[in-house]
Length: 426
Image 1 (cartoon, one colour):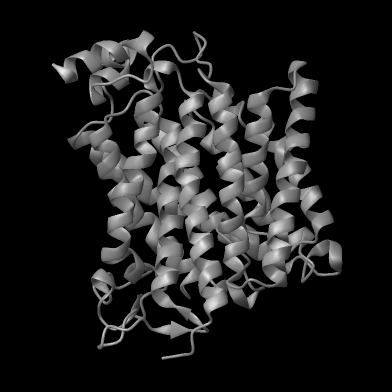
Image 2 (cartoon, one colour):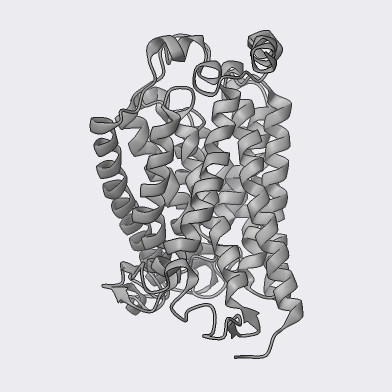
């Protein structure tokens, strides 16, 4: 038993709470971006992930991510600390084990929130057309077979960590989840969009966001919660956390500008949806780099990420895949930009600060390995579910509105909410 650092413990509890808030924020962000007949289903996909992953993480998620018994650096034994037992988090007397001043049970809570938000991010690629039951089964399988192994590989001393084989080139950097969260979720979203297929009339009729104020509110909550995501990953209320906080705010602000300028030049308008999306693009890009850049470097990263993500969201029309809410364009592309540009902008080993190409090379390697592993696992799960449960709701449900058909309720009275309320009261 170590000595408790109450300040650190309080900081990490607050950070965990901020990250947990991000998933309801994401639900608002995604919910506003779909059509009105699917808003509740879209939000339920995030809340469903909160419920399922929140339970799974305690049972075997922590053990698979941070257990001592590693299988080839790919994942840890899920049964070693199943249900937080086995001596990994608590002593035999039931007291919380303290490492570096922090009770490990607090770290469990912090890490669980990362697993939850990562699964929820993927749902944006599937808007308006998939069975809720299939989504829930996918969530449980994917977090087990893709997220927990990736967390172990990057943060748990595995294949992609500072203790892994690629560290011989340069020490890999992923401060808060560029590979584990955003590249992982982004490539999964792309695979699912291809397997599930497009919404009816995709590309032939407008599918505009039904509530842009909801989108902007969701983006604001994501930005607020992201300070726990990044600054909390410093594991201390100290200067590194302060740097991560400032870099997070600065990069997101710069990404708004990068996105809006790109949008203005391309389309003639700087939109509220662009501003909200720019926030998220900047937050995604700074996630792996928050502790490695200067604030000026964060401005550069934000401008680049905002512009590139604004361009990338149009790729779905060029290549014909229906990534409904731009998970690929924002999270995959933003995650790749942040992960790779660390090799140029990091004050320790970055090319612009006198370093060689080693850090850039290792950042590219870990990004590619993460994409390949996540893509393969996601494809296997997606095809298995397509052959068994099926992914798509019927055409009638998709056209008539997935909210009423699947959940028996509607977000707005004009779409049947009053009728559902009357039926429930009866």
